[in-house]
Image (cartoon, rainbow, N blue to C red; front, side, top):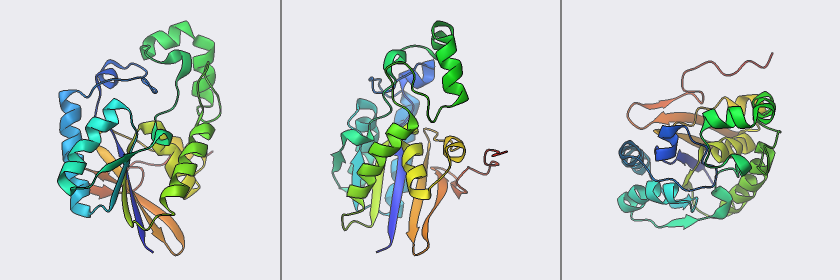
Length: 213
């Protein structure tokens, strides 16, 4: 069976705009975020959708609703699609994290994939739970599946399917107004990045992938 997975990030939130760490804490969509969700829903619906899954957090519930309305298909909410658990950093401005946890912030920026900030998850944790979710979804008979979630968990799931290195996975730009299409072929998975307005481009949005030197 040919499979297509659409990985969609929620629209911009109030905390995105404030540069505040969300993690699994709640924040509502801004007006721009609602517009982004609408544009993305139109683009994905035109490609065709057989099933929809989403994180149960408030910002993803608001973002998936336009897609459900356009396609007439319900969304199945799954806790494994929640964003990373940001631990002690949750709810703090990025600027304050840098000053309150300077050593931990430096360690995280040095190795974002493996380092766990205080009481937080790392990307290996996300890859494990995201991979478990994908295994269950790919056991279904649906061929075109939309997955509405968050920036970090999206990178982890794409890394799982494409077997990306941490450097390449972290280099994926999961903007609020773009989504990824991954296609299953006989030789394995391949993917492209879609802008809701201008259409598809390569996985890194036309930018050079990160250097592995």
